[in-house]
Image (tube, rainbow, N blue to C red; front, side, top):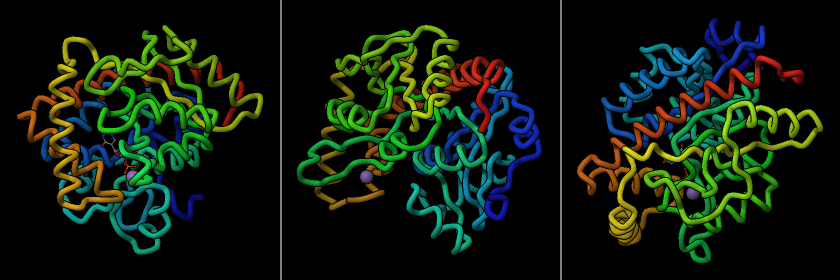
Length: 308
Ligand code: PSU
Ligand code: MN
């Protein structure tokens, strides 16, 4: 594993001694938000995790080396250089062997976090089953990875650019627990509720940590989704969001955008069409998730009997 991974010393020490560590993805930085707000947000999110008593570990690939924990300098490289590849699990071996720069999605970040011994990962929203699935067959590799990799993913649900009903169905098929944090409904990223119920509600970080321990110590594999709604003061209007999404989806179709370019295209258009409103919401929900992720990491590592 050390053939490919570079852990920052702080991250390595924390993992070795069983102190709380929180993984962070980098596609959200490179392909999910514009520069320079992306790098600024990434730094602030790391600071929030630190203030809450955990060690942040932003994950990315730099010149083919898998970095677990990024220096400020590398964070800026990933956030500003144009040639950074969006890396889901299937791109990891290619980007490593070709010694390219890569920003990891939820799926790739989960895989690498697990390899490094990290069990909690904070992001904005997970990928899922796309709308019009019967035609495009587009299901994010994030879901596959949630089905097989033992990492808890703290997110604000999944964006309404997706088919959230089908996304929840598919998570059920894969055996992935979906926990509503302080809510009975699956959040829709910019809005607090998608209208779809989650099966289980939790209200404290300790409850989440107990479920993680129960799942993994009995040998049930796979991840968990901790769905944490955007704070209400930052929530956008559901109908406006839906109208904007429809415009962006029609444009994507017209331009023939497919594969891994779909999500970044839609996100960028939403930011533009909403005049920056959606970007602000996006930033605030990630920060909110970072606070919760650090609390869960502390609850998990203080009494975790099970080590990576
Ligand atoms: N959802 C967001 N913002 C993002 C992403 C998802 O609200 O930036 C990114 C994440 O990195 C996620 C990826 O893992 O998009 C999913 O891409 P795809 O739909 O191509 O699997
Ligand atoms: Mn896809």
